[in-house]
Length: 305
Image (cartoon, rainbow, N blue to C red; front, side):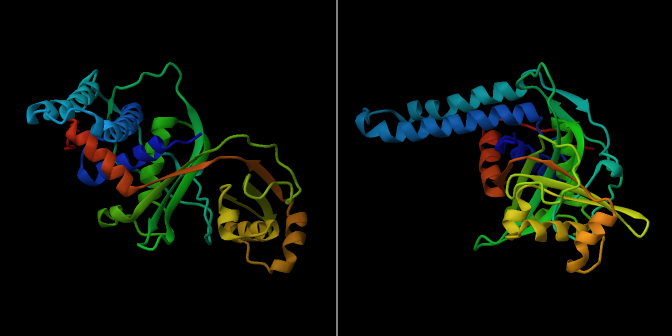
């Protein structure tokens, strides 16, 4: 299941691309994210108990307490630091968008390679998941607007997949202009790891609203069409199951009337694959607060040439 640390890593990769530096590695982000929230919880407990403690603590003693934990974090960041090359972004045939639009395919031009810090928590087994990365802008009154959403149904090594699609969805979703650095304060990021894929079925209603994501395919006038929606899309849009299928068909490129979709589905040998995935999100201010904490702890990222 996706975590907020995965979202924090997506933000780390996006911001690092603007700052021309190497991002922290996924394992480092996960461990630092955990330590940050643990220290925040400890701080809240300490605040509740401070009235009961001796108030004669010297300024030097207070400063020592404040700097002890960041020093430990700095040692974590510097421990076993190394660089490793990443491969280029995924090929176009494994890439898809999963939000309402007039088209289903997204091209992915080659992107320059970057290096990442390794270190942090070691992993005996690399996780692999199909995944989608979604970027939204959020207005001051909380209105959310899609800014990019691209993913893949091919299982990806988690760090590689998160890094690649964080950048692909930010810069290569052809429905939108590339995200600019000036938009960062308004951004939110959502990660969905896909699981529990079903066998194809011809029944377009054989799924549960709000639980299943859908990947459809059908033929029309000698051409095969396909598109997908993540599990949360239909519920967010307030669609019925029929409205969702019609919207998916239109997203794939079909332009028939709503009253004829069932005949098109039947004659076009329509198939549907269900899948699941819980979307997890994070807003830029939350990431920025964490990253400032990391920076104060002494983290340093190399600048790219």
